[in-house]
Length: 455
Image (cartoon, rainbow, N blue to C red):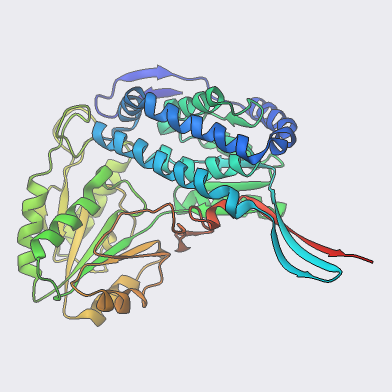
């Protein structure tokens, strides 16, 4: 498998992919080791994970550079991701013992009823390339803390990062037979589906997630999906600082080149402030620096996948053919690498792909609306349900609107944000199940109910 730098299209290295046979061997290894890892006291498992977090900090420069070179994320954003991952790890380190402790729910004369939380066993973590550290630690960190063994398959677009994660976990003290990295593309992922695992945790596209879910359903084991989104942002006329809102909306749209499941993918603006918002938004987009992701000040690097350029070109052409106006960008940048110009489309509607289908790139459609009711109707007009944002001056108004939106996460005056203390969960085609928060700790356990009666 060739590892290509998306900024230069140069070959970084080649990696030998796993096969069905080697994947089976790695499964046998962690299957044998899981029981021993489960017996390690939780305080020791947590201490091991703490060491891993410290290694992420001490080797941050090398890790960030590797991520930037194989995925295209600007270097400062790679550092931000590593810092964010360490923050999430800290949450798990500080809270897992509490939420995994046995719970006595009834204690009376002659009877005790309690709940114990046991690990699932061996789980597959089929991870994503857009935030390999952040989406990875959501799964393999609580999985390991709770006593599971993990077969971790990084995306083929961040293979070097995935291998480094495995190396550092082992260096921190996680046994070789409790965590194994499985390397390769879709065929290797399919090989994991054939193994007798005790749970599957996938982050990626709806299409792939649906296929995984259908394949493993007969196994009757937990299968959790963190899938895509078509995340809306609404700007009502209740706004004292439209320019500031436009700045936030632009960052939520174009951060990480729009390659985020919770990036802003469509914007609705009340007609009373539409012109003011568009002027400010356009100014923000003009200031975004596109270039080599290893250079200072660059905000827009290359796309991670060359094939996504054609998807974005198709969405732009479809919108223009149906009456949209191109305010900025709209095409591949004239330079080596998988670069696409930051793109803004106006006069859009829901007949256009850009307002209906996930873009996963630096492109946004902005639609004028007459009132809050029209905005809610359009925000709800989607097969996805990951996040929704409202920017306005009053919390009461925002919550009134957000309560009507079928999404797993609701934002007031923020967007493209994830917190370790809150569950991360999708609805409809955005997936199901929760990572993060205490729910994302217990996700990796199976409860056992004890009825203890003294005769």
